[in-house]
Image (tube, rainbow over all chains, first blue to last red; front, side):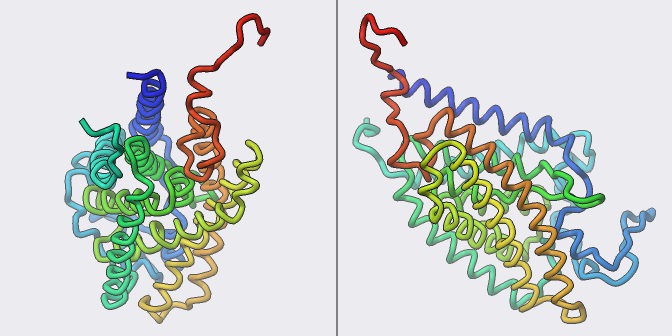
Length: 118
Length: 231
């Protein structure tokens, strides 16, 4: 392995660690308030906590929004089985899943350089 | 966005737009992917996924998060960047129940196609500034990311105009969506400038926007210092 190659691998490893730390640890510090789009679509409504969960009272665009079809899936809402103490675990799994899907696709699509042929 | 905000026909149309756009991006991406940039692009997608989890406050009770289009396009090019953001959105919708399924096409259109195109076009336009020095590069990243965020949110306004609930005033929806995304765009700009700045310090050869200008790798890794010279 050439020196340049090792530097590249180190950089990639560092980049991966940064992504994993963000998803696995910093994600606990994320602001849980609704984001810009949700805020805009919630205008005119009040979010009321009920036994059945959150309910929208009033007249707003978001009342048209349905529950997510996969809201019962094990990692829904970046929690594990609905427990958001495991947001970091869900985040790490998401980073790894994205890395596998995107990295795999890009590796298949790449131009094969003459030097990469065995 | 969630399901139900845009009616079925318009959701279907933008589903088609997303499929065609992603297919075109795959063809274009081949040119930019090689043994070095393919793993980089996979990591950029993973980084965008991670960073999208970090909602930051923009107003009391309102948060925002990175969309990542300009960031990805500046680092790995517009075609690969569009695929990065598209894959992140698909993983979020299919695994994390974040972002609707019938709305996935509209979400990909807004953030992976429109946002990436607007962000990269801005960066390309300002490339002479970006290649002049570090401050220029950071400024270009900030501006491109800001444009990416606001234009992507305009995509939602367009879809809402075509297939949203007509009982609500389009002007009011457009005003709050665009206004809030101007604020989110500032956060997007800061994160994009920090990230691209860090990559450019470590490996300028891996910043797509700087291709052809970055110091060749060989010079960085094996500096040739003449014997006896004082550095």
